[in-house]
Image (cartoon, rainbow, N blue to C red; front, side):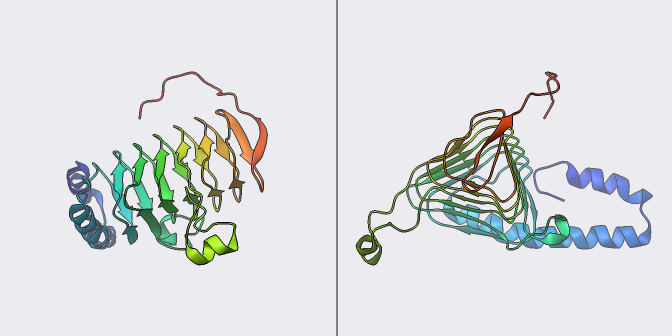
Length: 222
């Protein structure tokens, strides 16, 4: 189903066990996925971005800007509510301004995310980005009204999200924030300052609620 993967072969082998109705649905889903992948591939090609391995796109996505976008392997991008029961308010939007760099690691999932990169955003591996999360490394406008009128002095600062972070639905991550590895951000939070690794944080503004202790030290295969 996805170019450059073995998924198509696996699906073909399993088709023999499907009913006619299931085969029709699978076929329609394949057509839909191609409809969403083709324009994305075109944008990647025009921008000179490398097409990521095993990228899974479920719904239309918006790709904007002339910066650098790097996606890892097996990234999943959802833009329709029928693929996420939490509900998706809008298509996923990835914006990278000229001179900026957005890096998204392996096995990252997002649904209806809005990620705007004016300078630098780095998202680690195995990060789960809940429905309708926003991540911004800019304030978009200055606090001073004269600066806003003249469109100048807009504050920006890089954002770094560590491996295995889970950001709950409808949260907002603002400029200059670092979220440590394995941290969890409660739904509806506004993250304005750094969150340590292995902590649960939430609220407006987000604050550490408690530490998180892994229940097992076993190595988990990706």
